[in-house]
Length: 345
Image 1: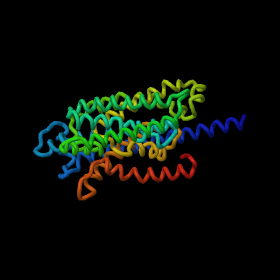
Image 2: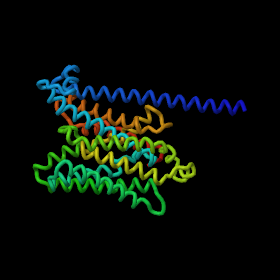
Image 3: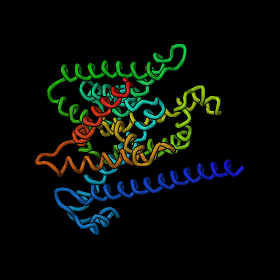
Image 4: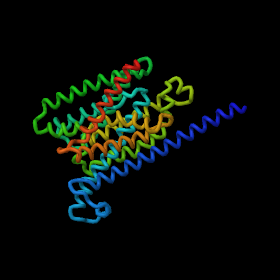
């Protein structure tokens, strides 16, 4: 009895330590995100005192400050915050649910589906941003449906889903290249700027769909995401533990796709955020609990920090997607080398 009691105490002590670490790291990530948000509002061609920024945000009209803060910096900050959170949380969900670090929306073709629809609207139909957003969401959902149907077979296969997603991504990337090739010269800069992923030109009136989507679906994925670690054990084990694996997977996929599609339609496909956020969150927090919230905060921090670097660290200003691409590409190469050594490729 003493041995059994000591084992229980040892396990409970470990759980409490991991929970305490999760709370501490998540709180630090939240603080970092808030600091970066403040930096986005304070920094620019002119660095304004924090008192003037607060007065401008409260509605007071201050020459120069009100326009710069409320019209340029605030929409840019909000777009980076919510889009980064959406990319990070959705990427972590896909990687955890499919038990593969390569299984993120960028690799699986979901982002390419939304991008192809957006480029088609921009270059061929010259539609409004609202239509681009709707088309991106629909295309992302259609891409997921195709992937799920073709990977279903006699039973759901994660490996088959990833391979089909990579194939769909290649097809959609070819479609995007073809659209850029046949489009008129004046439409190409707008499409390329959007494809690189950028917070430039973010406007407050375009952000409500992104904000509402993240606010609605974040509680859903946090609630359902408690079963993510059980889904990692496999469908049969999850079912035996009382988790409706099929319904849980569909709900998580639909929620993630909506967040990814809306974020992509707002900022463009910001490279590697959905790929990097999950592994960084797991490394910081540990993999014992659901790390959807930490991954979302990591994604938001990466986008905001990359945008600040792109604006001020170089002689020329670069879109946020260029900076995140420079950060993510070496990690992808290292991950592929590590997986190859382990025989996982």
